[in-house]
Amino acid sequence: MTRRRAPLVLKFGGASLTDTDRVIRDVVHARSEGGPLVLVASAREGVTDLLNGAIGHPRSAARHRKVFEEVRSLHPGLSPAGRRHLPRLRRLFDLLENGTVVDAPLADRILSQGERLSVDWLAGRLRAHGIPAVPVEADHLGLITDNTYGASCILFERSGPAVRRGLGRLLARGQVPVVTGYFGRSLEGRVATLGRGGSDYAAAGLGAILRAERVELVKRHVAVLSADPKLVPQARPLAELSYEEAEELAQFGATVLHPLTIEPARAQGIVLRVRSLGDPRVLTTIGPSRSDRRNRALTLLRPLRLLRLRVPGGRQRPGIVAEVSERLARAEVNLVQLYTSSALLCLVLVPDQVLSALRALAPLTREAAAMVEGPFRVALVTAIGDGVLADVERIPGHVVVAAEGFSATPRALSIAVPEEQGPRVLRELHRALVEDVPGP
Ligand code: ASP
Ligand code: MG
Image 1 (tube, helix red, strand yellow):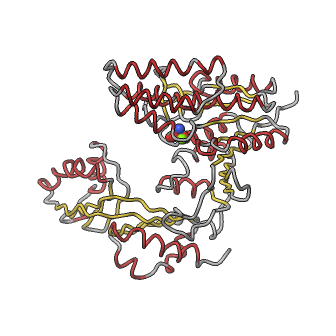
Image 2 (image 1 turned 90 degrees about the vertical axis):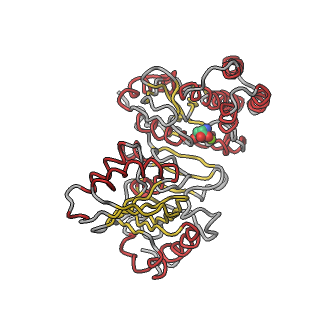
Image 3 (image 1 turned 120 degrees about the vertical axis):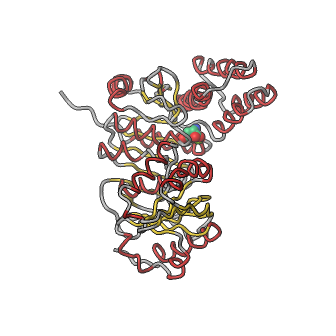
């Protein structure tokens, strides 16, 4: 028996779909390489925001009408099956207007309509250019997620057989599946979205399930840059990142990748490529290899708050760090960063969680005479890149002096600074750790 070639997975973001002619040329080109092809698409640009706005104003019939018309106009030429999505969206809006309480599963069902329309529309455009494209809705396909509506995770073992069977059947007929990104079907059988920007994660997940040759995330303009170009004009595209670097980058706030995108690719050793639709030279490869010093990135996370917890006896008090973490975990407070010295624990968190954190720590002030100072307004500047710790001496002294906290691993080095200094420190570290660093 001859083994079929591993497919190439191409994901198009909402903004890239705006340049439909380029998308079509891109797909024609990918098909000319001869291997099986699976496409994943986001909603068209702005549609998820429109749907979110409609959900946020559940009683506003006028707003819903406007959203409906805008969404409809972005999807001309739907197939007969695709045209059924429109009355369905209308009925969902009716539910809202009639006072149905919008819980997270209902919101996800509404949000998923953007991708359902988008894949039908895109498949139609591709067929008009001779590509045998077939729209596929991921929940019907059997992409199973957990029940965390709005931020669900793909369950790979459970999804594998149905996804491989469903897509395999289409590929065996020489067809090109165009699969919805962004959502799957929860264990309870309802629509569950993967969080904003989740189509990257869906594409990486499908690639892992299919043991793809490669997964390419096609963005309209940028690939992965060394910093946000709005804050650092000298930012430049990164040619190569290791899985671990890319993961740190997504977790530390680079919005170009959904934070869960890397894990499925890493687990199966599948190369991810982030590339620009407009310019084939702008391309970032994410894979198993360690990259060199030219591939470093900086991120800025803000606004954040820092709490200083002073515990008499400090580390002498057995289990103090565990106790603090447990109390915070029980209050569902996520620590963005934790710095410790012997008497001081500095907690960095998002502003919304400060009150819960203070409440969770209150018993310690009574039982252990601990003192809490803050909240202080801070920003977190993080430099990411294999071996970055070796360049710590390049960081200007005054940045270190002004720091509220500092943490480092060989791959990520992050500094908490007073909030208003964040953008300047970001630029200074970009100069010190990216621009002024010689090649390998
Ligand atoms: N359409 C969804 C969003 O805008 C998912 C995605 O684009 O990746 O967040
Ligand atoms: Mg989108």
